Image (cartoon, rainbow, N blue to C red; front, side):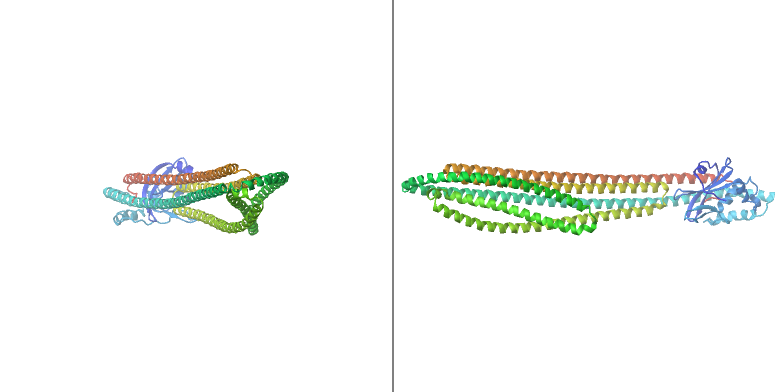
Length: 620
């Protein structure tokens, strides 16, 4: 009897021939009747004022005439308005079959909240219409209807105003609810933004404190080095002055002995020169072998590092079951590398301390060795060796303690980094879950909206997922940049170790050269020492300059990365604001359209009802 409406049927519904208002299930509807002569059908449309949805019920002419076979007063096809009013009184909704509402024709008139007075007015005509009326009865009813026309128009106006006020009140309530939702959403956004700013300020303060501590430590270290250098120069000058004074006092007494000593010295120097030449050749051979061994060891170290990095990259991609074994191997390898690095640093510092110590003692005893070269030199060298072994033992103990502290510090930093990464991952997961839950809740609340609103919400969910994907991609890029930065720091450490090794080799060569020229004059020795000190200071200055440049470069990279994160955060906030503004505009436009449409339709309903024939029941 009734068929589901299609788009073509709605577009070709026919001319509007009847319209009135009706309340069904506490909702207000405008019932429109369209007569489609081309399609030979009559369409009843119920427009819901609350959701702006339309429900249709379609009859062809034969089915529509069959409805009134048992109603003598409506059998006549010319009584169209009476037929339309009869059908409208019996319209109802059915929710069978999936929960969707469908417009149907009930067997009895549906209950409406009519005014008692209107019911009493229309009760007697309808009761009499059940029997066949004579011409006199119809004339009498028509005269009574003419008298009631004015009162009927007043009732229609009153009910229309009541419906309009109810609709406007409900519309205002919905508008207030939307405003409250927008205010709450904006408040949550402001709170999250304030929290992020607070975290950024805290991190910035921590970084500033750390940089300040680093600067203070560098300043203290420079001041300490300058103080030690000044004290060493003072001690050297004092010792040289004392030796010069002692030499001037004993010069007259030792003239004869110096002559004999010079003769013996020339003989010994000749022998020493011959020994030095032989030793020099032997040392050159040893140095060549050492350089070859060092180059080979360097190649082995580089090859081992490359193999380690490749193996580590493969192990990262291995299955989760091998994770524990991989971690154990990694820890073992790190311990071996730490031990190797500690041994290298220990040897380097031992050589530096031995050189500084021997330099101090040599400076203090140069003039003494000029007067007593033979037995006193041997005794002095033996004492130097003993003292060197003792200091080497002490230095080794200090370096071992420093190495243990460094291992503990590195382990703590690694644990803190792992905890921080885990915490960030948990926060990201919770944020994604919260976003998904809020999206699902929002979709459930908005299921009562029209199809256009649901499509917009779906598009918004897709944009949020794309944004989450972009955010995850940015995090992945940040992790890759950190990985590259760690590799770059490892390469820099390796390069610094190479430079340090070359420096130690240079220092060793200079020590050998100084030993070969041990018998030179005091003036030449002072010039050579000044030149060596100048070169050492230049290298230290260069190294400090390199370290400062590296620190500055790292700080610039960190600032660039922070700027990129700030740009991404600003873009995200701008997108959130834009979506909220667009959603508010759409809601306001929809509400304005609904209000204007309902008002115009109510006015049209009142006009149509006022111009309806006598048999039509007054609309609400």
